[in-house]
Amino acid sequence: MEVCQTIAGIREYVRRARERGAVGLVPTMGYFHEGHLTLMREAAKVCPTVVVSIFVNPLQFGPTEDFRDYPRDSERDLALARETGVHAVFMPDTAEMYPLSPALYVEVERMDTVLCGRSRPGHFRGVATVVAKLFNIVRPDSAVFGQKDAQQLQIIRRMVRDLNFDLEVRAVPTVRDSDGLALSSRNIYLNAEQRVAATVLFRSLETARRAIQSGERSRPAIEKIMVETISAEPLAELDYASVYRLPDLEPVDSLDGELILAVAARFGKARLIDNITMRIPG
Ligand code: PAF
Image 1 (cartoon, rainbow, N blue to C red):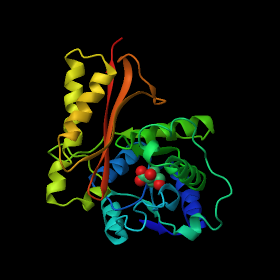
Image 2 (cartoon, protein in one colour; image 1 turned 45 degrees about the horizontal axis):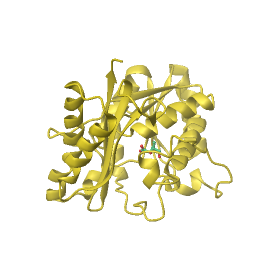
Image 3 (tube, helix red, strand yellow; image 1 turned 180 degrees about the horizontal axis):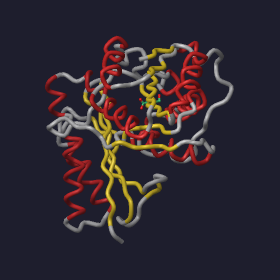
Image 4 (cartoon, rainbow, N blue to C red; image 1 turned 60 degrees about the horizontal axis):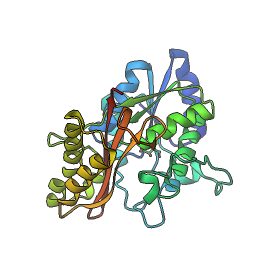
């Protein structure tokens, strides 16, 4: 497995690798768990060469967020990537990615004003900007993202369309622990009690799903079910529990078509998110 710290290095690697066929990119911020490895395996299904980027992107963290504390363990990450069959890891430092303070960004319209965008202003601009840079650096044929970060996934899909990136975006379902908790690098912040409490996120989504399956068609009623479930957990500090229409995260009046049910809450220092999608016949 090749490890490249420079843009010139990964470009040269990809130039040679392209002779073998398609190149798949898995953009990550490292601190791998099974969810990341699933993305890498998905890329390997469709591309003979898999490149993984590891970069904790300062642009997507707010001034009071956990950029400095974000968990990092590059040695372990490299060992896991190697075991998973990754061909190259692109691991730039901040100076390599941002030699100058940026004068241009990828601005996200409207899709970043809902869900996580409300409590994380500028976050999706930071994500879209770094992902656009990674696409331009690696020029992958496919890029793989997790469904857990559903808003990020939809914004990236839209960016690829709006800015004509010549690649396919593939999504991989959320990987969960046996009790339903979605895997996340930030789960490391949870103590034992918070870890148990955090399962309330998936429970709230499952309760809402069952209500819809039993015929409930009022959006406020579904949001109330999720809010009440999460609020009943004393260690959870609710951020949002909302329903939006896919793919463009538009507000929902009637519960039909392709929808996302999404929740976010804080458990101590950890801000966790989760979602499910549902197709409801009209
Ligand atoms: O999902 C992540 O890990 C990050 O937001 C991403 C896509 C690697 C951009 O920094």
